[in-house]
Image (cartoon, rainbow, N blue to C red; front, side):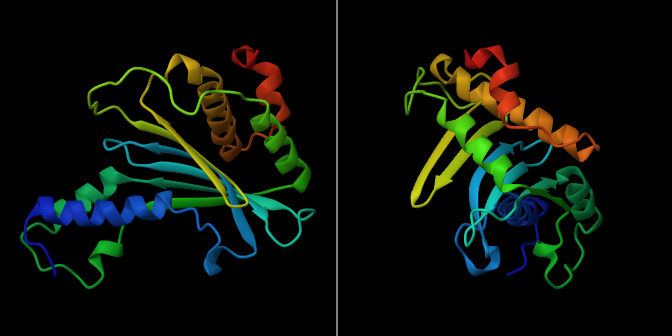
Length: 199
């Protein structure tokens, strides 16, 4: 089915783009031999979703893992749809989204240090007052270990009890973004040592 309205086309295209950015692969065949460990996700309806997913080698813990970065250029895709308004849509138009992707290798030692840093954070599973809907971007931290899975989500200001986790999130995100610009990969130990909010 090909929707005729601009809004209908946007809803479909944006759904496929966001699914691609947020997909982690998990234990599926497409992800082998890797298994997801952690994902930082920013769901931003205005600027486009962004994700950073950390993977370890599921077959040999001594082998290197990787970080996969994805960023959706929602503004470019909106402009593309505007140019197609009232026109016949090409085949597979809903898969023609603009998502940048880069991969970075990480050592098994780096992954172990990341796990230790995360294990040092102690927070309640749920916290903060009930708030009304807000259009602010969603910040999400997803964690996996074997068959265990956790997800934490907040708007711009996290609950007070989650500040150590949010401090990790934003500190980790800042260093990952710098790494894409050529800064050497940091040690996860630095996240706890240099950020006073962990103390």
